[in-house]
Length: 229
Image 1 (cartoon, rainbow, N blue to C red):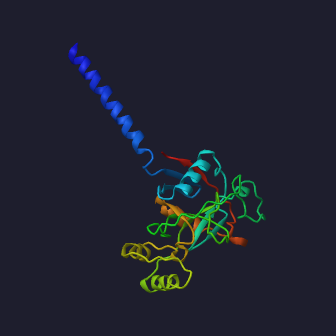
Image 2 (image 1 turned 120 degrees about the vertical axis):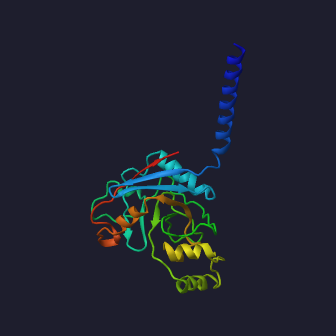
Image 3 (image 1 turned 60 degrees about the horizontal axis):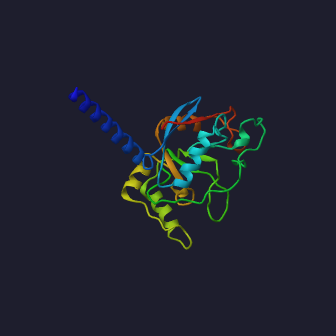
């Protein structure tokens, strides 16, 4: 009987410790989201180092805000953009890209030198505001192109001009741009707040669809987004 009591106590202690550990780590673990389309499924990791964008995106996903919205702007070799709430029931001639989530407030920029526009990067769209603050709902996923050293050096030269962002690429970042591709000229101008960790080929499939005026796909590309953890 004593052995059974000791065993029960040990199990309870282990469970309590595990619960405490999970609770302690919930604020530091990276959140994962699933973006489903007719062209496949992408898994995206959100960065903890961009908490304003992360939390806003999670809130909208949990509300079902993105369900049935379109990737309304698709440019091969560049990116696929979506998240405009007016796209949900838009007719084929509607001009899209100006919609926002309720409140219409922008999200302050969260530039981080270690987050850059490599292929698969999740970044926030924005208008031309001088603060470079982000849309509160629209986002894009980078396809981009492979960049050689000369092209990356040219981008760097643009950055050392007056009033340009103080930023230089690391050796690892250069290697990724050369091997995977991306859109380096957007770095430090638009906030990157996550990356695709599974389903990069889905970006390629969507980027290859036929488009018409304003880079809108001729056949609607709808999304459904849910949290995975």
